[in-house]
Image (tube, rainbow, N blue to C red; front, side, top):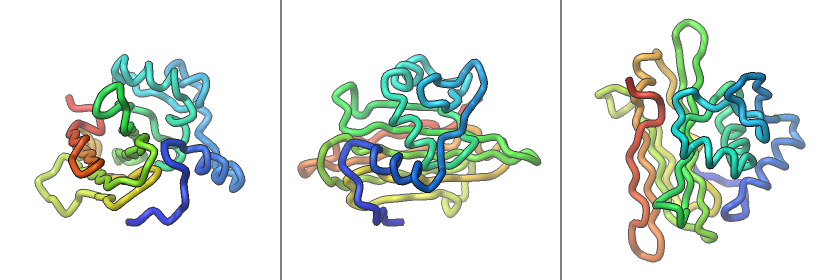
Length: 181
């Protein structure tokens, strides 16, 4: 998939404005784990670093959640490769009806320029054909990528985020996009 929307680097502002004009807004969670600024529900299993990023940058959390769709809750927000933040990886999970669940990932480009990015999301399965990938040169973000399946297949789904910048790989992060029991 190729992002064809012209987006300013490092910010989700244009996407938020476009979504607001179409009437698509962030889900308004009414729960103790909801981020008061963004209205996005934060997973009870989210780490303290994720909660700190959500508190500091609710607009980015909300914008990435809007890209994933309604009903998702934030599982991970991680600045990559470290606090210098050339990119931010967001993962969201959603429980559905009939025992189905979904994971969604968005890899925000905070570098200030168009760079090669790859975002890959795989359910907990040995079938590589079930993985979803978005890779190209992006000025804004890679993704969203989503996988849906049984609760068991979504648990421990893996996400890979790669960014190449100025001739080298500066981010190569593999983590879990959903809780792993």
